Image (cartoon, rainbow over all chains, first blue to last red):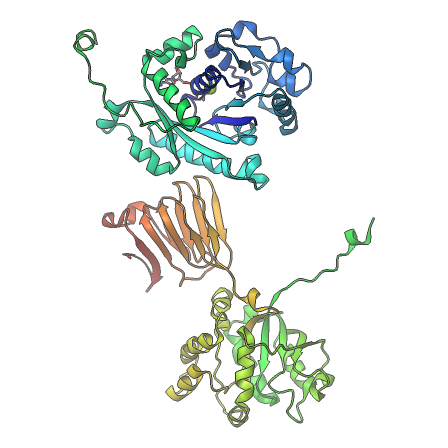
Length: 269
Length: 308
Ligand SMILES: Nc1ncnc2c1ncn2[C@@H]1O[C@H](COP(=O)(O)OP(=O)(O)OP(=O)(O)O)[C@@H](O)[C@H]1O
Ligand SMILES: [Mg+2]
């Protein structure tokens, strides 16, 4: 059974693409045949973070318009077995997508026996975001510890439960996961950011994980390597924990406290 | 084209105002109608009604055509007459389609039954010069009335109080009305559905959270929300609002003018609360009530917010 998971947030720049890349890579590393789709048509990004930008020939819009086959469009990851990337078009806009067209693509992916389809949503609550969440079975709500981000997550949760295919067909509701990203316990303690408890209380959905704010994320993006592949990075470890929980394991949450700096770290910042 | 796509014949239920005649006396009915209609002329103008003849259909010498004309004179539009016996004199005289009144002892039917058994008191009361109305439809508040019809004995108890406002009726009158054992009125105007279930308007129940940007409206009834109301979400009801999760968005009750509607919540963190258009924003809600169980209602021209 193929599971479709949308990574969404409402607000821009909170870490959706970073999360999509790491979640897809993590699932594939565990042996699941996984594809990650960039729905951010016009602002193609995922291919950079996945490090496959030089191998893009066809894209999602070509596939939707039946100008290319699935086989021609999917990019196979070079590092991780079972992992495929479906890039967005940089030259078109979101109007190029239709529900019927995407339904065809989803159907083809299911026939190709993918275990997971990860949909990287564009920011906002407009057509692009609605297309990305329409076929979702589960949703990873990516939220930064700020009031505005939490508000937008609440908004996207409402859209998810009223405008997704599951909502429209009266199926079981889309399963919701909260992923708090760019968490900085120091700033939480200083009262500049919302705490994990605040966010969970405000959104009232199960917590999948807490990804700490970490400079390794940017380094990884620049290197075109999802941060989950760097297990020396706290963010990478946090994404691994999230994969475990997504697969049903219960693990205590980490990275909520201020990291006690060792002697060397204190010396060198 | 199939005939079904042009016209469609199907059974459906509607709620109509029913006018029950307790007296066949033309002038008494006329006078009572005038008073009733004058309380809310806009509400009654061109309103379709069911004429309930069950209380007078066995009386001799009732002028059916005259009664019907009197009703029409007051801008009411009789559409059907309700009788027990379709073959009675009155039923044959009246120029309206007939429906048979049901004798089940539920909802609206309880009342006619009770009144039928008090026939003698009805007749002796007919000459009363100052009719008492035992309903509150005249306030124009349909919502409330449909609510009150759930239990007809309760309805007459409540409406007995209401009558005191319209009319400085004696305590004895009210007493009688409260026990449901009288009918002084030549007429009785009340909402009645073809079916009892239709009269009982169920509250709108929402079990999931209401998220930012979503709007939920309970038309003509109460709204009950089990989940939270997110900031930027809006819940609206024509009647009361009950929220069991945190209320962080906007809550507006009595939006069609029912100023007796109230908001009840477990944790008051609302951006705005409003009763029949009278609102307060979070800034005006006393600090010590934030996050507390509270109720909000309107009286004496003021919005009250108090702990529960
Ligand atoms: N845990 C983290 N620690 C530090 N920086 C992060 C973290 N997660 C994401 N970032 C940075 O935040 C920026 C936005 O990330 P990303 O592109 O994944 O967000 P997005 O939600 O996909 O944005 P958009 O809405 O534009 O699609 C990037 O510069 C990324 O490196
Ligand atoms: Mg992105």
